[in-house]
Image 1 (spheres, one colour):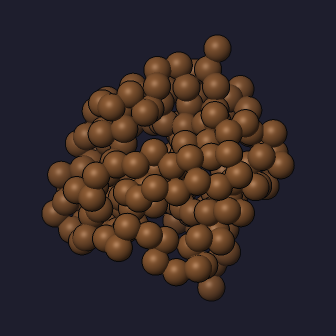
Image 2 (cartoon, one colour):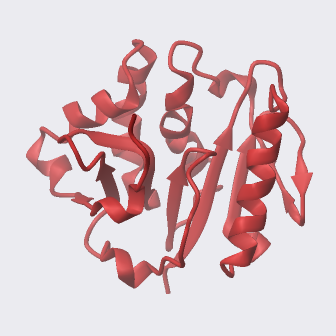
Length: 188
């Protein structure tokens, strides 16, 4: 049975949350996930520094995963490493999102309809561009994100990298466009 995991990635050159606001956002994420029924095992928090809160202990990775040119793209660029290291496991579905993107209601694997897809991507709702602030993926998407990483390393935003990659019909067929309810946000 496929399970849904909440993946949060925060890698910083200072080996810390940088500001109290980020630390607070991380704690709210954990509490919010617990309130929606996720167990501590369902929350995968990846940092480059030791951190623990309310039963969730961060998985510490190396500083080399910080993407100085595109810090917002770290959570996309690190996926191949997380799969390679067994942190992202076969048979599980991961929701990868910004630290300030909160789950408002329960999400089930069947709600997403990703049985025949490796990734579920959201857009902004007002333009045809992937929003990598909230997306779902399986370990089988490792190669897709592996292709995105060198593009990101060239100082190109992960959203642009994924738009470029999904121009390939074979990659596009493995990614499902999810409706905006999985990435509902504010604009202006």
